[in-house]
Length: 230
Image (cartoon, rainbow, N blue to C red; front, side, top):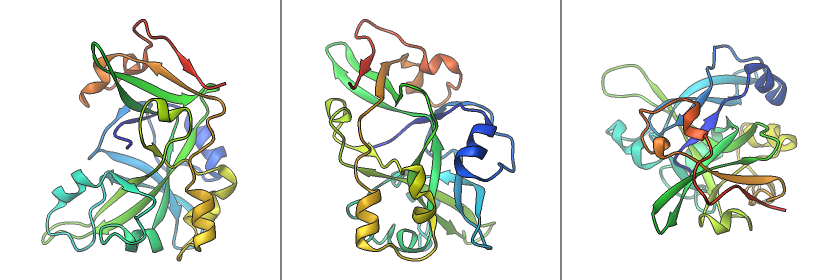
């Protein structure tokens, strides 16, 4: 699964990567947690890319309570097209979630050790996601999102049994295009991202609490050392 991630790169980097200027200020985020608002990239009304804010944890349009989103922060890519919670969004409302790393916790004799997983060149990338709009009985509509997961690549497999879907830049347009995906197109985008250039850094347990949000969350710690896929 993917339960925490980071987005610390400058907005100009994101503008270049996603070919659309951010419409809002984005301060560095070192410990993005479920239920928080996160930036997404999607297709807008003119079929152009646009930025939006969405609550992390998808609330289906038919939900009776927003709390269901707390359980839907991730969606298995293998079954999302058929699950009632995700199938409408999978067909019509796919999005990209910009990131530059994510966290996984690895069991050690001393307890669970958080690792910050990223590319060695620390480049930004995009998770494949889904978004939805839910209208409460009284109040304004809430837009929310979920991150798709897939089986791990050979590197992540040593840390966890799932990994987030990472969409290659040359498939961004295909992923967020309106309308259903063909089975062949989906299969090509939902594979585990190659392990080349990935690394995992043991980091401070500060990241365990969503109240902590500063660079110390990604400071290297411990004796285990940097894990690099070569």
